[in-house]
Image (cartoon, rainbow, N blue to C red):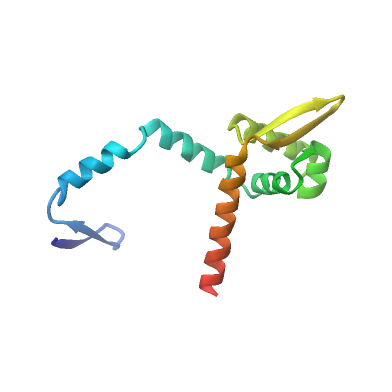
Length: 134
């Protein structure tokens, strides 16, 4: 496969193939196995919600505790109760956490086991990257 290098206006070089598609059958097979674009949109939205360190701390606290009320989550994460409530609303709208009310308290937990797996794999990746780089 021949490639060429071109420069962008900013001076970055880009590697490009000299043809449009080298393996059209393989490309077609991959395209058949990929999810619909809306699935990628939903996944990107999930990662966007998880891009805030405070929200990741909330999820981590729920990973450890199983279930906590808003005031206890605030104490564990160092966020104000207002910030906790706001972030928990975002996490809830993305189906990452669920809640139940008991009297005047609202208790949160992870929505399902997938969230635990998602965060654990992310933490392993970050830990691996730190160890590999150092």
